[in-house]
Length: 202
Image (cartoon, rainbow, N blue to C red; front, side, top):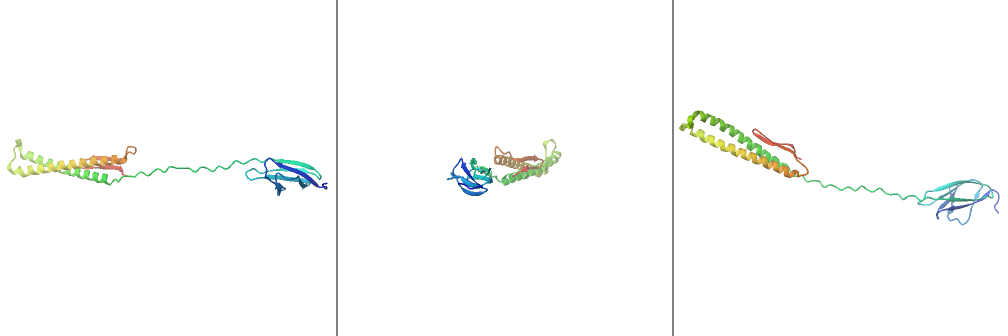
């Protein structure tokens, strides 16, 4: 028989292999072979198992008492590791060099500049010849001026042709380099004696 001041406590759990403690001291694992022998008074009965939330109860027992404590452990939800963000690396777009376009626009500017200068000189020579050649008749002394006028006119025509060709090639190169989805930020311009492009080449 139990002596005074000692009580019996039958502890059961809803899952086996749960570690049972009395006042935080481990006394065994479920299923227990027999009731626990505890001192009278207020006792803390606990149960713990990996993968389950720990649980405890406080009971008051007197000497020679017999009590039963049922502890229910709730399974913990498995920790879900956050999915690593998967990013698709966008391949870097290979940019074509703007050097050819710059060269073409430089050639266009030079050609148009030469054409403009020789064109102006040719027009001035023509004005002088018009004064010396009334009624479309020119004195023999004006022959050298006529030859110079023709040369200047040819040079002016060639200069403008080269300038316009360089401008067209430069614009075409930029348009092909930019592609259909990324319009170029370069804008060609043409002025008296000058041609080029403004904007970003990269």
